[in-house]
Figure: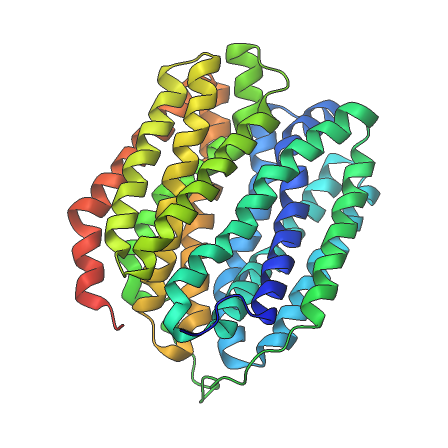
Amino acid sequence: MEKLWNKEYWKVMTANFSLFFAFYLLTPLLPLYLSENFHATKDVIGVVLSGYTLTALISRPVSGYLVDSYPRKKVLLWCFFFFFIFFGGYLAAGSLVLFAIVRTLHGLPFGALAVANSTAAIDVLPSSRRNEGIGYYGLSNNLAMAIAPTAGLFIYRATDSFDILFILSFVVAGLGFFVDSTLKLPKKELIKNKSKLSFDRFFLTRGWLLAVNMVFFGFCYGVLGSYLALYAKERMNINSGTGVYFTLLSIGLILSRLQGNKGLKEGKLTLNAAEGVIISSVGYTLFVAMPNVYGFYLSALFIGLGNGHMYPAFQNMFINIARHNERGTANSTILVAWDIGIGIGVVVGGFVSELFDYTAAFWVVALAQISGAVLFIAAGRKFFNRRKLY
């Protein structure tokens, strides 16, 4: 059997960990930063934070086209360089408007980098271990999610300084850039006839229904990731549990990826996905229906277990309906759909919580997750089986 854990695969895993550690170190604390430093209201916080997601969304399809049409390592390194540099902009942003501009522009390299690095991971994986390797690749995201929010909250409580967090994110992103600069990628066929552009060069139209499904699931995580800390404080008087919540969620993600990889290796993609969306539905419903410390932390495990089954299965489904020279486009499509959902979730969550409260916003989340699960089980599975190429 071909070797899965080769040196180049370790490099893209390490770089991916650096990318998401730098991202998650700040994400849970940014609503608090905007509220305390700039006295921003809930709806304004939602709009400001959604700018990052919006520009990431814009850059995803373009980056998918670029990594399929140009040398992937060059595209990868330019994306990582700008992602790394933008962390310095947070230190210079002295007003809400400047911060919003920097945060919004930072989404461009972030969106492109996630596509470029995950496509590089596919390139360095042996074809016989690809489904399995994609599942393990996500562990680097999950480990970052488990460690970074807790580390960020601990550092902030110890120092009462957001500047230190911005500097640390800058340094970690720089390390990731250095690791990817040593990466050796195999030569791949590039898309020819570059002068002829069409919509399917930027978006995998063959996977449109799977993309709709991902919008539902991204919506739920967008609200959760942005308003968890404020909801916990307002509804349950939990002031320091956000880090523990994300740690438990990440443990669930890690455990489910390790357990679910057997199914991925055997090609049971739709089964893994169906199990994941059902378990996540239980988690999001538990989160809002049981507003106490037990429901709060138990929901983290369920959501982690569910998403850890669902996401790698969906990513493999996108890749399995794409041609060999459309891998970048396939990766960008699932991320575009996820980002659309997150962006809508951040904005809608902010406005619903401003008009009503955070409880109402999370009931909307539970309904959205259940709706997405029903859509996949009723139609998404058959859609994939009709269109898969491998």
